[in-house]
Amino acid sequence: MTILHLILPLALVFAGAAVAAFAWTVRSGQLDDVETPPCRILFDDETQGRQPATPVVEMAPTLGSNTAVDGRDPVAGSQPPP
Image (cartoon, rainbow, N blue to C red):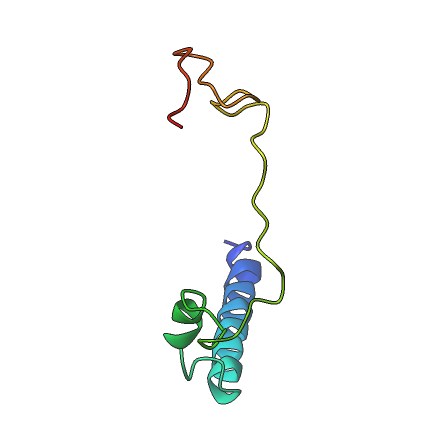
């Protein structure tokens, strides 16, 4: 029974802190727009007609790829079409 004298006030303080934190987030405007930030990552920031800041570079085949250095398929042993 004496543990209730310790746990009950701690639970009330914890609940009060949670309510205060929620009230602070609402007042500071953090919950005004909850739909735009998740959708913003899906769209490019670039406008049409602008060149990307870094040039696009094609990578050479790596050792783990399915094509050999000379272009033939190492599994099937066939040559690629000309």
